[in-house]
Image (cartoon, rainbow, N blue to C red; front, side, top):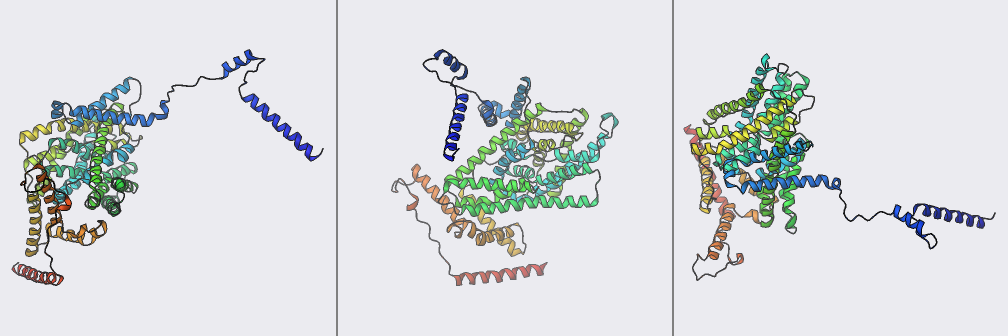
Length: 601
């Protein structure tokens, strides 16, 4: 057989095979001779085209997430539509009750209620709340009271953890309690979980009672800064309880770990804050993406800290505090408004979901109830908090100019609320831990007691004790200018007296910031203008426009004013030679005064 004829036969076989395959797989169409049999085949093989189909599994996860968020927002909306209810019950209490009802309903229909997963809480729900608090943190009251805040956050948390852990261990040694198998390290681990004040719970309650700025910044600052202590104590006692022994070296490494966790988190947050500020320097042509840099750099700071087991809360606070003055000088007003309201919205939704999930998780369980252990835990939380605040305040007031009064001490002690951070840390305990279920039950009881009992009664107590409330009106331009003037004046007084105090170092930091940092982080020529003059010009321009638009100025003036028509005030300039001569005279006089002060001493 020739090659040509072989190819023909091969092609014939291939075409026949294809035809048989098509005939076997495709439905047979009717011919003229066999219509009845082919119509039967069509009826058996051809399906009706689906006009409407349901595939819930395809959208289940995003649909349920959106449904939970919608439920949270509707509950928040309904709460504020009932003024009588919102005036008596804190919002956090109502949201927990809603969570209990939803969890009970899910249980009734035979489904398993979802639990507030620790990964979801720490990586998704907590960061927006902390970022909102850190970005809009009132810097002046925070820095003026940072020493007191650190004492409450570090020494106070250590006191609560060891006081509660030690007494609970003593309680467990009583045979009638039935917990003789619990060792000291397990009790100290539990004490470290329930000792820390929760920032989410504090924000939810204190923002509703409008307490004065001093008490608010003390309690809220403590709740933010005690994260490093809580993380270190939790990890230490968790490891020690697994090993069973503790050495002097372990204690020393624990102290070192505290400084690494806290200072490392601050360093990571500051680095990302400077990166965000530097990036915003070049966004003048793409204003629409400016808010994204604020959110992304902050979240990256949090994730980077968590990756290295540093304090993510400290990183978020540091990032927000560092970036804000430079970012707001670079971005547009619309971007600032977007950033502000998106942060508020994001944190509000996260806070609402946290409290709802706390209620649902309570229904989900599992629980192990021991009346003596749980009731004693609640009592010890109150006693340790009161004793810690009174003892530390007695020492702190010896160094403070503005003393903490008895009323302030009471609100600080009574406002030590616990929340979802304690629950999530308890949930992180391994399932093999024999006391896990009992610890979770006691933690939930403490949370409910502090949020419901203390949260609902703190407003009437503030009214009864006539505690000073927060000033709602913003400071006027006159107050702002005189505050800045007094800061400069007190800096000069400290320099004349030869005492390098708070105002001296603040002035040094501001001068370094203006000379070196702003040059690289703020776009254009904005960094060259003195802050006081720039602030006064901005406020004066705003006030003039408002007066003209409201018709308060004389009719001889035009009815509308544009920003281009208002000329900036001419500032007299001093030559370099005159400036150096003034500096030399002031420096020599200051040196003479310091020598006189040192001789007199």
